[in-house]
Length: 121
Ligand code: SF4
Image (tube, rainbow, N blue to C red):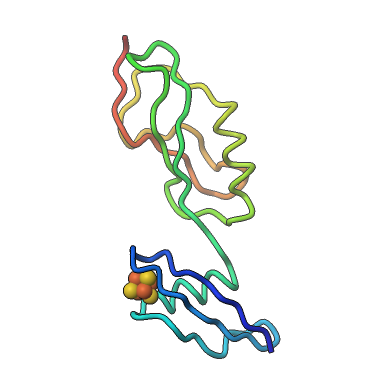
């Protein structure tokens, strides 16, 4: 039997959640105040994922960078590679909110999208 202690990131309450696993299977979740905490905890111990938010350099825009994020969660283990790929990326203005800046980041099947408009300078 294995016990994991987590802080739920579902809301600012930050409940301390305890997960019991037996042979890799979740058998009990306690400490969560709502169902969202249980869902988070089960996923976190079996397949942890995150939305990544960052910025990307822009050529010819009114600002040098544009904010962006992954369109969906990516595996937690791919976050470092994703940030590295974004650090090496440069796009050209204009950029519109929702534009795909990079497809299939690091083979995750998830695109990087712009989260604001950035007109030409
Ligand atoms: S368990 Fe529910 S109430 Fe507690 S931090 Fe998570 S989302 Fe918020």
